[in-house]
Image 1: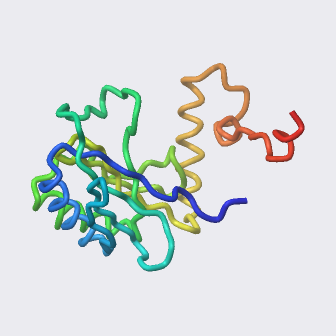
Image 2 (image 1 turned 180 degrees about the horizontal axis):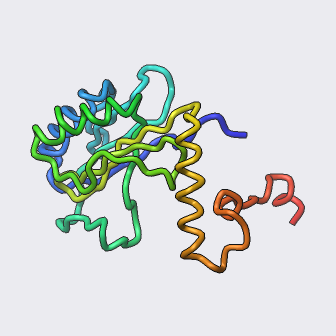
Length: 185
């Protein structure tokens, strides 16, 4: 089993200087470090939450195109990037002290999303290039009422999906073929 998620993501932005200035403020507010801004046949700036410990990171580089992304169109590519929050309170503060203060387009204000996971709480916003971001919190140990809300939200969704034969908590789980099974084919 893997013990880490994504290694890194590179995002191409329309106005590199403006985007780096924005991301410096955003990631600085969230406690990230910027560990690379060099031009080695390409220009890129990287941000990591737990630098210098090897962990996933986000890179920003200049786009060659001039068209702003439209996350609502759900075209091929990244729909949104979600960052881990430490708590619901951090999301509330980030919304009030950074997003609103910076005039960032907030597409969904801080709210609970029990259908995603017990205790899931997030805010969604869009940067100047049209890249949609989410700051999300999922508690390690959810409260009993969060479990109840998630089960209830799943039951509500099941009413809209008569094709589901089991509760959504079972419907959503899919078994993936293992490395060994794939090697036998």
